[in-house]
Amino acid sequence: MNVQGSKIKIFSGNANRELAKAIAENVGVPLGDAEVKTFSDGEICVKINETVRGADVFIIQPTCHPVNNNLMELLIMIDACKRASAGRINAVIPYYGYARQDRKARARDPITAKLVADLITVAGADRVLTMDLHAAQIQGYFNIPTDHLLGAPILSKYIINMNIKNPIVVSPDHGSAGRARNFAEKLDCPMAIIDKRRPKENVAEVMNIIGDVKGKTAILIDDMVDTAGTLTLAAEALIENGAVEVYAAATHGVLSGPAIERIESSPIKELIITDSIPLPEHKRSPKIKVVSVAPLFAEAIVRIYEGMSVSKLFE
Image (tube, rainbow, N blue to C red; front, side, top):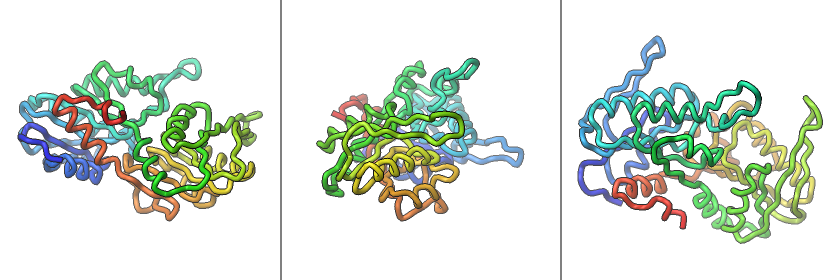
């Protein structure tokens, strides 16, 4: 893939430079020269060391851990490009932090996902490119065009190549049922849903499985894996209900707290995630496989740059 002309610029903060480099390489342009440093008092300093005047700028920065630092880096880079007269500023956010705070669950709750969307817009972004938002309605929180990429085609392609016998796609909860249904269609196999409930405070969740998993290889599908508590409990419930093996796939590997220990001691044979969030060395495990989203983001960037449809990528 090679973009003609010099009016496209790709920059990266510190959140996931390896992914940014891979995206720039797939697009066919060098990664832009920018310095993003932190002063001793915690303040972030950004220096854009090349002209962006009139350019179509893409700033690649997932807002993963440390969430607030990475978010501030993104906002300051957007502001720097706006003040340097960039033609259009595209915030490329492979993982959108605060996405789980998307509604008022209790009285006086904030809707932080909307607040972050407002911050990105006010900073000066003209467009957002992201992937597998935790809740689809977050797209509507932005008052600027927002392109929403899907990780399912990448994950399903990997799983299809595994040639799993007698598979069944399983949603770990009702919220992921739509995602699991689409995944099952790609694999041309049945699906099941895990219905979980907590009988009372400090009592473990009871899991009922809607669907027949006996004798099948279960594939758990979700948008993200954070502490892996729900995922590993679901895997144990599947084995108890007769599943032969359990695999899991998720777009975003947050993997915080005891996640790695839980995955390694669970019945999950393999967890497939993408590189939307970097996987540091201390979180690597023989059970975890990483597939890259760089080619997909590169294709989307080229389509945005050339004024083509992004949705065509998923038809």
